[in-house]
Length: 610
Image (cartoon, rainbow, N blue to C red; front, side, top):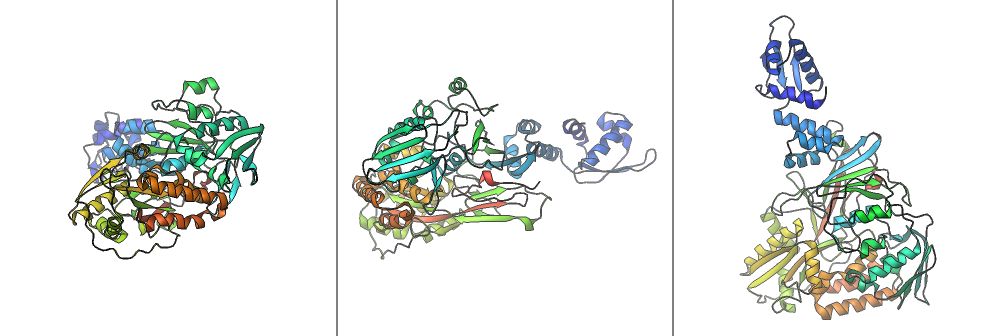
């Protein structure tokens, strides 16, 4: 008998209270179940076997037996739904819960982790917001950039120390006299839809990227992109750039079909299960929002509820150990309790930890608490305040910025966060990156500041909390504060259009896995940063970066960029607040979970002994 049919009989026992032993005869049970004595005995035995009830029968006619229900009626529905979720039968689980998405979401969180289904390793996670379309040429938040790394590959990768590693290109060289970078592609490469990857396609791709505003500052010195052989890709530059290959290791330079860049944006439509890894060109045109990549995972399902990834068998490198990944997405209010946000923050009574992922099952007897493991790292970046030179009213003077920096110290904001009961795991930031030298400041003199100030912040829970705390601090100084919340892309678009006019802008930086070139790209191209700096300071910064890339090796980027970036702090254009603590916590059923720069677990390396 199926669980669903057995549950229907169980629901007829609702007159009994859960967890309370009742004295009852078999005939009374049979009457409640509307069935024969023999069938009632069979049903009770099955329920006892499934551990839904405790049935202690007494032999003899009309003898009173003991019955204890282990679950309430709702509790049993949740128990069965959780079982269906673990088996990947999500629609059945939602049906049993009568479409209650709140309970469904809670069960998804409780059953997150890795399971074996028909010999395949499946990882399930929950996330607190909807993902943007996963296109590399769009401005993306941290979690989307992590997912792009799962779906796409680049020509090369770059380590945190600035060492280049082969990806789709197996070798490369730089002719410093001709300013020419040449990359040699692996033979037999394919996109997820089966298209062969050759250099002529990548010439078209990079020429298309050069036309986008998101790339122009970084690719301004690229005179031409061409190919003399099917597996050879050349970039002719107008000036020296020793770290250009590292730039191409960035997420935004992921290799994709040029059609994904040049086609006009359309309203998002569900991307339902793709039956095959190889689709024809005609089929691709029929599904304009289908995302085609080159990475270790391909997207097989994408809708408003979930994103499902499957291992790409023709990936250029080692195939992923994980076969499938399903990420369920649930929108949560900025003012409500959050499970995950852009840097994986979990707010709970047990963990005061920002940037938190739970991998594994809760309330389980499969493993003991001693087998729990936890990996943590401080993010490569920080949460910071920008003093906006493009403010609607007169921009703040140097003395006002210095005085506000003293008022809005990391310690002061943390103290206010504690008063507001909104703390999260952080380290105080003395510079943009945690490994950099502290920027020392002389004491500020008391300076008159405007009676009204405005704050721009995007919908990232940690930044929003900081904005409210800053507002509370400034109110004590007689300042009326207006907090305006944008989406991440709205904030970037307003900056690009010179329409970001708030006095203070709260934002964050979290470097990608190619840390040296990721930092360079942010300093050179971030629209919010350059809008807030104003034209004069923006031009100065770009000149410094142009000189930098002409003479500095990629491995020296972080060290040599430190004095340039630190000037933004010492001149009070940028005020670092906190470095996040990112954490992956999992139970012993998972093996080899590594934490990435984005605070997410590394999917392709997860494995299980089950």
